[in-house]
Image 1 (cartoon, rainbow, N blue to C red):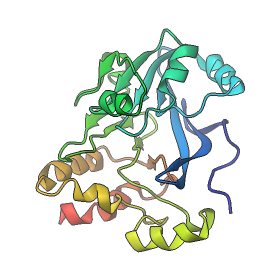
Image 2: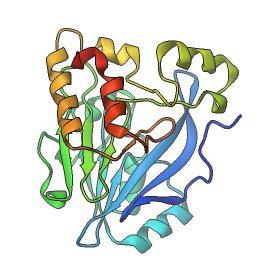
Image 3: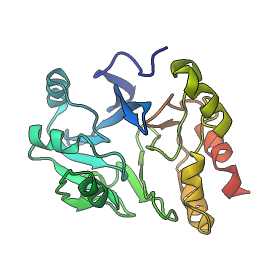
Image 4: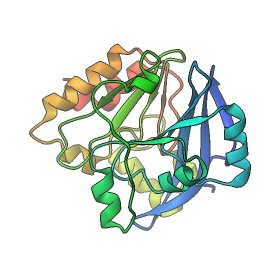
Amino acid sequence: MCVTYEPLDTLKPIGSDIWIVDGPAISFYKLPFSTRMTIVRLQNGSVWVHSPIRLTEELAQTIEALGPVVALIAPNWIHYAYVNEWKERFPEALIYAAPGVEARAKKHGLDIKVDVHLGQGAETAWRGEIAQMIVEGSKVHREAVFFHEASKTLILTDLIENFEPHKLPFFMRWVVRFVGLAAPNGKMPPDMRATFRGNESLLRNAVLRMINWRPHRIVVAHGKIIDLDAVAHLRRAFASVLD
Protein backbone atom coordinates (compact mmCIF):
# COMPACT_ATOMS: atom_id res chain seq x y z
CA MET A 1 0.00 0.00 0.00
CA CYS A 2 1.32 3.45 -0.97
CA VAL A 3 -0.94 6.49 -0.73
CA THR A 4 1.36 8.67 -2.82
CA TYR A 5 2.18 8.66 -6.53
CA GLU A 6 5.89 8.03 -6.96
CA PRO A 7 8.20 9.43 -8.08
CA LEU A 8 7.62 12.41 -5.81
CA ASP A 9 8.77 15.99 -6.38
CA THR A 10 9.29 15.20 -10.07
CA LEU A 11 7.83 16.94 -13.11
CA LYS A 12 5.60 14.56 -15.05
CA PRO A 13 4.50 15.92 -18.45
CA ILE A 14 0.83 15.50 -19.36
CA GLY A 15 0.92 17.73 -22.44
CA SER A 16 2.92 20.46 -24.09
CA ASP A 17 4.19 22.88 -21.42
CA ILE A 18 2.07 21.35 -18.66
CA TRP A 19 3.20 19.01 -15.87
CA ILE A 20 1.90 17.51 -12.67
CA VAL A 21 4.10 17.07 -9.61
CA ASP A 22 3.11 14.61 -6.90
CA GLY A 23 4.07 15.29 -3.33
CA PRO A 24 4.03 13.47 -0.01
CA ALA A 25 0.84 12.58 1.77
CA ILE A 26 -0.60 15.00 4.29
CA SER A 27 -2.98 14.33 7.17
CA PHE A 28 -6.48 15.74 6.81
CA TYR A 29 -8.87 14.87 9.63
CA LYS A 30 -6.24 12.26 10.58
CA LEU A 31 -6.56 10.56 7.18
CA PRO A 32 -3.70 10.38 4.63
CA PHE A 33 -4.29 12.38 1.45
CA SER A 34 -1.90 12.45 -1.49
CA THR A 35 -0.90 15.89 -2.76
CA ARG A 36 -0.45 17.14 -6.31
CA MET A 37 0.26 20.43 -8.06
CA THR A 38 0.07 21.47 -11.68
CA ILE A 39 2.73 23.50 -13.47
CA VAL A 40 2.14 25.42 -16.72
CA ARG A 41 4.78 27.23 -18.74
CA LEU A 42 3.03 30.19 -20.35
CA GLN A 43 3.75 31.34 -23.88
CA ASN A 44 6.06 34.10 -22.64
CA GLY A 45 8.19 31.52 -20.83
CA SER A 46 6.96 32.31 -17.32
CA VAL A 47 5.72 29.64 -14.91
CA TRP A 48 2.26 29.22 -13.36
CA VAL A 49 2.02 27.06 -10.22
CA HIS A 50 -1.34 25.62 -9.12
CA SER A 51 -1.80 24.33 -5.56
CA PRO A 52 1.90 24.30 -4.55
CA ILE A 53 3.12 21.20 -2.71
CA ARG A 54 6.05 20.92 -0.30
CA LEU A 55 9.07 22.64 -1.83
CA THR A 56 12.38 20.80 -1.86
CA GLU A 57 15.63 22.33 -3.07
CA GLU A 58 15.83 19.94 -6.01
CA LEU A 59 12.26 20.73 -7.05
CA ALA A 60 12.91 24.46 -6.74
CA GLN A 61 15.90 24.19 -9.06
CA THR A 62 13.88 22.17 -11.57
CA ILE A 63 11.15 24.81 -11.59
CA GLU A 64 13.70 27.60 -11.97
CA ALA A 65 15.04 25.88 -15.07
CA LEU A 66 11.59 26.15 -16.69
CA GLY A 67 11.41 29.91 -16.36
CA PRO A 68 10.55 32.67 -13.89
CA VAL A 69 7.68 31.82 -11.54
CA VAL A 70 5.03 34.53 -11.82
CA ALA A 71 1.91 32.98 -10.27
CA LEU A 72 1.25 30.91 -7.15
CA ILE A 73 -2.34 29.71 -7.05
CA ALA A 74 -4.22 28.87 -3.84
CA PRO A 75 -7.33 27.41 -5.53
CA ASN A 76 -9.59 26.92 -2.52
CA TRP A 77 -9.84 27.38 1.22
CA ILE A 78 -7.96 24.17 2.10
CA HIS A 79 -5.14 24.31 -0.48
CA TYR A 80 -2.78 27.01 0.69
CA ALA A 81 -0.35 25.37 3.14
CA TYR A 82 2.83 25.78 1.07
CA VAL A 83 2.13 29.08 -0.69
CA ASN A 84 4.25 31.17 1.67
CA GLU A 85 7.13 28.70 1.36
CA TRP A 86 7.08 29.15 -2.42
CA LYS A 87 6.71 32.92 -2.13
CA GLU A 88 9.84 33.04 0.00
CA ARG A 89 11.80 31.17 -2.68
CA PHE A 90 10.19 33.03 -5.60
CA PRO A 91 9.55 36.54 -4.22
CA GLU A 92 8.68 38.04 -7.62
CA ALA A 93 5.70 35.69 -7.98
CA LEU A 94 2.23 36.94 -7.10
CA ILE A 95 -0.10 34.98 -4.85
CA TYR A 96 -3.52 34.45 -6.41
CA ALA A 97 -6.16 33.07 -4.06
CA ALA A 98 -9.74 31.86 -4.25
CA PRO A 99 -12.36 33.33 -1.91
CA GLY A 100 -11.96 32.19 1.67
CA VAL A 101 -8.26 31.38 1.59
CA GLU A 102 -7.01 34.30 3.68
CA ALA A 103 -9.65 33.86 6.40
CA ARG A 104 -9.10 30.11 6.67
CA ALA A 105 -5.32 30.48 6.78
CA LYS A 106 -5.51 33.18 9.45
CA LYS A 107 -7.81 30.98 11.53
CA HIS A 108 -5.06 28.35 11.46
CA GLY A 109 -2.29 30.77 12.36
CA LEU A 110 -0.91 31.40 8.87
CA ASP A 111 -0.73 34.90 7.44
CA ILE A 112 -0.97 34.83 3.64
CA LYS A 113 -0.59 38.14 1.85
CA VAL A 114 -2.75 37.65 -1.22
CA ASP A 115 -1.84 39.83 -4.19
CA VAL A 116 -4.85 39.01 -6.37
CA HIS A 117 -8.23 37.59 -5.41
CA LEU A 118 -9.35 35.19 -8.12
CA GLY A 119 -12.64 35.88 -9.88
CA GLN A 120 -14.76 34.59 -12.72
CA GLY A 121 -12.51 35.73 -15.57
CA ALA A 122 -8.95 34.77 -16.42
CA GLU A 123 -6.29 37.04 -14.98
CA THR A 124 -4.20 39.19 -17.31
CA ALA A 125 -1.06 37.10 -16.76
CA TRP A 126 -2.63 34.01 -18.37
CA ARG A 127 -5.59 35.33 -20.33
CA GLY A 128 -5.98 33.54 -23.66
CA GLU A 129 -4.08 30.50 -22.39
CA ILE A 130 -5.85 29.37 -19.22
CA ALA A 131 -9.58 29.87 -18.75
CA GLN A 132 -10.85 30.39 -15.23
CA MET A 133 -13.94 30.54 -13.05
CA ILE A 134 -15.03 30.34 -9.42
CA VAL A 135 -17.57 27.61 -8.74
CA GLU A 136 -20.33 29.35 -6.81
CA GLY A 137 -23.22 28.00 -4.78
CA SER A 138 -21.54 26.40 -1.78
CA LYS A 139 -21.89 27.91 1.64
CA VAL A 140 -18.29 26.93 2.34
CA HIS A 141 -16.32 25.72 -0.66
CA ARG A 142 -15.58 28.21 -3.45
CA GLU A 143 -13.02 26.63 -5.74
CA ALA A 144 -11.15 28.29 -8.59
CA VAL A 145 -11.26 26.01 -11.63
CA PHE A 146 -8.89 26.33 -14.58
CA PHE A 147 -8.72 25.03 -18.14
CA HIS A 148 -5.41 24.93 -19.99
CA GLU A 149 -6.56 25.43 -23.54
CA ALA A 150 -3.52 24.15 -25.45
CA SER A 151 -3.52 20.75 -23.73
CA LYS A 152 -7.30 20.60 -23.14
CA THR A 153 -6.67 19.98 -19.44
CA LEU A 154 -9.26 20.80 -16.79
CA ILE A 155 -7.53 21.56 -13.48
CA LEU A 156 -9.62 20.85 -10.39
CA THR A 157 -8.66 20.49 -6.77
CA ASP A 158 -11.35 18.94 -4.56
CA LEU A 159 -14.52 19.16 -6.67
CA ILE A 160 -13.74 15.61 -7.79
CA GLU A 161 -11.77 13.10 -5.71
CA ASN A 162 -10.74 9.90 -7.46
CA PHE A 163 -9.02 7.65 -4.94
CA GLU A 164 -7.58 4.30 -5.94
CA PRO A 165 -8.61 1.97 -3.11
CA HIS A 166 -5.57 -0.29 -3.40
CA LYS A 167 -3.35 2.67 -2.55
CA LEU A 168 -5.23 3.48 0.64
CA PRO A 169 -5.04 2.11 4.18
CA PHE A 170 -7.53 -0.70 4.64
CA PHE A 171 -9.86 1.34 6.85
CA MET A 172 -10.21 4.01 4.12
CA ARG A 173 -10.98 1.64 1.27
CA TRP A 174 -14.56 0.84 2.20
CA VAL A 175 -15.22 4.50 2.99
CA VAL A 176 -14.22 5.82 -0.45
CA ARG A 177 -16.18 3.04 -2.14
CA PHE A 178 -19.24 3.69 0.00
CA VAL A 179 -19.32 7.44 -0.64
CA GLY A 180 -18.51 7.14 -4.35
CA LEU A 181 -14.98 8.51 -4.41
CA ALA A 182 -13.29 5.38 -5.74
CA ALA A 183 -11.51 5.43 -9.11
CA PRO A 184 -12.36 5.23 -11.92
CA ASN A 185 -15.67 6.85 -10.98
CA GLY A 186 -14.67 9.49 -8.45
CA LYS A 187 -16.95 12.45 -7.84
CA MET A 188 -17.57 15.32 -5.43
CA PRO A 189 -17.36 14.32 -1.76
CA PRO A 190 -20.87 14.08 -0.30
CA ASP A 191 -20.16 16.49 2.55
CA MET A 192 -19.07 19.09 0.02
CA ARG A 193 -22.08 18.34 -2.17
CA ALA A 194 -24.34 19.06 0.81
CA THR A 195 -22.96 22.60 1.07
CA PHE A 196 -24.49 23.40 -2.35
CA ARG A 197 -28.01 22.48 -1.19
CA GLY A 198 -30.45 25.13 -2.36
CA ASN A 199 -27.99 26.49 -4.93
CA GLU A 200 -27.73 23.51 -7.26
CA SER A 201 -28.41 25.71 -10.29
CA LEU A 202 -25.14 27.59 -9.70
CA LEU A 203 -23.21 24.34 -9.50
CA ARG A 204 -25.00 23.09 -12.61
CA ASN A 205 -24.01 26.21 -14.55
CA ALA A 206 -20.38 25.74 -13.53
CA VAL A 207 -20.37 22.09 -14.55
CA LEU A 208 -21.92 22.92 -17.91
CA ARG A 209 -19.18 25.46 -18.50
CA MET A 210 -16.56 22.81 -17.73
CA ILE A 211 -18.27 20.43 -20.16
CA ASN A 212 -18.36 23.13 -22.83
CA TRP A 213 -14.59 23.49 -22.53
CA ARG A 214 -14.44 19.90 -23.86
CA PRO A 215 -11.48 18.74 -21.75
CA HIS A 216 -9.43 15.71 -22.75
CA ARG A 217 -8.22 15.10 -19.19
CA ILE A 218 -8.97 16.20 -15.64
CA VAL A 219 -6.29 16.79 -13.05
CA VAL A 220 -7.48 16.29 -9.47
CA ALA A 221 -5.52 16.89 -6.29
CA HIS A 222 -6.35 13.58 -4.65
CA GLY A 223 -6.22 10.29 -6.49
CA LYS A 224 -5.79 9.22 -10.08
CA ILE A 225 -5.99 11.86 -12.80
CA ILE A 226 -8.76 11.31 -15.33
CA ASP A 227 -7.17 10.97 -18.75
CA LEU A 228 -9.90 9.15 -20.67
CA ASP A 229 -13.44 10.30 -21.51
CA ALA A 230 -13.15 13.42 -19.38
CA VAL A 231 -16.44 14.92 -20.53
CA ALA A 232 -18.29 11.68 -19.85
CA HIS A 233 -16.70 11.61 -16.40
CA LEU A 234 -17.96 15.12 -15.66
CA ARG A 235 -21.48 14.16 -16.73
CA ARG A 236 -21.39 11.08 -14.54
CA ALA A 237 -19.79 12.74 -11.52
CA PHE A 238 -22.31 15.59 -11.50
CA ALA A 239 -25.33 13.68 -12.76
CA SER A 240 -27.38 14.69 -9.72
CA VAL A 241 -27.31 18.37 -10.72
CA LEU A 242 -27.40 17.85 -14.47
CA ASP A 243 -30.56 15.71 -14.55
